Image (cartoon, rainbow, N blue to C red; front, side, top):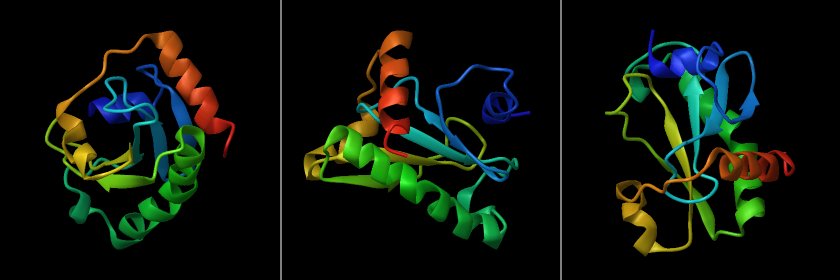
Length: 129
């Protein structure tokens, strides 16, 4: 069972943003920017493009209102999708608030935040959903 499956199952706590029958979205606990959210399918597949087609299509539809909520909450120019997938062998996308090309290396710069700060970010984003 992957780390993300344990989070989805509630075995590891998370700062949940949204959930449906196929997907789970939660805050990255080492964010690159406030609002940095992970969206994961509830099935364990290592690589994003190995997901069944309906999941691959569905992950974007599920992420869309979350990305819009992050954008509203943090006033960024856009929320971009980044797919890396090397740290956890479970397909996922990063929703990352960005304001320009200078933010492209954002994943290389992780922030250290407190649980209270994560809770505040969670509540702010959820308030826009």
